[in-house]
Length: 235
Image (cartoon, rainbow, N blue to C red; front, side, top):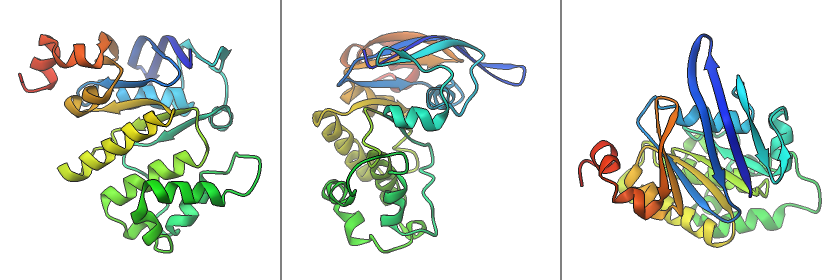
């Protein structure tokens, strides 16, 4: 088991955002979490990353209880998040953004890993000396993913990677997500685009108003009548 969330509860002030979330992610899986805006998807990812306080429950990672670990400690354990909205460092170059992804790493020079990211996203190499803020939305998403990969994560958390992107760019981003999974990266993908997410997921969870209401394999959820009606436009 890579990660297990047990009874996770979280509040914003008096408002309960997550109500006893239980989920599991096995090593090597691509697990999708889908749901409408406001369902609590980003709150759950932030709680896993340690930047959103938990009111109850526990999170276990590779057999260790990390519920009280700091966000930096969680990165060191092997968890990296690509945040909603990308949040690249605009004034810094593409390459400097990538180097920032290594801040908790120990070991040899990171040049080889930067080249590996450039191999996955060739446009980033072409623009490596440009300020990240001058990139298009799709290129910034590639950079945000590349920055997370520079920490050599065991678990990659992706928060709405398709948000605000044109259909062709969404297709490219999801193709890269599939490639990362094929290379052995364990991925927890949070997406409002349920069709695209479930189509590539091994397993999925459906979140409504802070609660998991459905779970199953990606193909099973794609053909589930409730999911179709609520998230797939009745396809």
